[in-house]
Length: 373
Ligand SMILES: Cc1cc2nc3c(=O)[nH]c(=O)nc-3n(C[C@H](O)[C@H](O)[C@H](O)COP(=O)(O)O)c2cc1C
Figure (cartoon, rainbow, N blue to C red):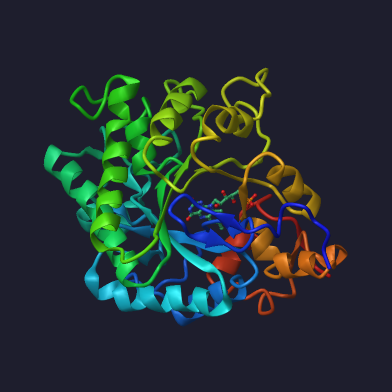
């Protein structure tokens, strides 16, 4: 039996939902859904293999409308006819004993044009991302902004009807909500852009729409989390000062958690290499007593996770749970020396990572440590 101090403590979120432990599956796009946005059987197997040990599974991002689809094989939460498929996913996660949280999302200017009706990629402003071959998006109209805010609420209603325990608003990783907060992608001078306060208006309107859907449709406790990336490299780009102002305001929205998206849990500034103070510490110190903070990023061993949980109440595991679906169970049984920390190239089936996810994982350089075994 494990004598780990934090991992196996249960945790009650502000909405009242209790997680049986403090480790969640990080949201990870798996490219496994059907073209119409419905969940495929191989995707259900992928999730079942990673459910049960963790307190909650946060799903891959699901688009809230057809202009927000960011990946081939993405789950859809944008039509009522997808509710039965979403229910299959929530049921598969519940069957194994974890809570199920649907990540809801709009890709904005990061959407590949071939996935968007008429290749009409939209964002806060007509500014392309600073990545090779990025399309220049069309600036959203007032009506489109209002519709998208409504769509986040509607996706939340579908998650509720499908039996999920919560939603995570994807305000991180350069997608639409972050694009409105970023001075790089948002050059508007109406109520949705300009000062840092005005750049918060879209993220806050999304939170309000989601919370109203919960108030109207949820029969009991329902989790609403918010994911954000604290900084951007671009100039202009989101600074830590901007983010501390954002979290001050988010902390007052009765959210269940803020999920701080970092590639390494204790990462310092990506804008100033001399500023090595962990971003997670700055956020925890600023708002951790008001809203629970969740960390993530390059946590692999039980020591890594215990160290992180000494700072924040919850963490999520991404790549580690792809390489080691039994992470929590092995720690619980005191089998920490059995934990895989590299992708075993001969264990695709055992790890339940079907094509095309497997090929993508293998092809991105330095994404995963790999072992032939
Ligand atoms: C294959 C893959 C897909 C991902 N897809 C998403 C996603 O859909 N939504 C999201 O917020 N983050 C996504 N991420 C980021 C992870 O949630 C996580 O923040 C990141 O991998 C760092 O954590 P880790 O070191 O534990 O993997 C993805 C990461 C990977 C490796």
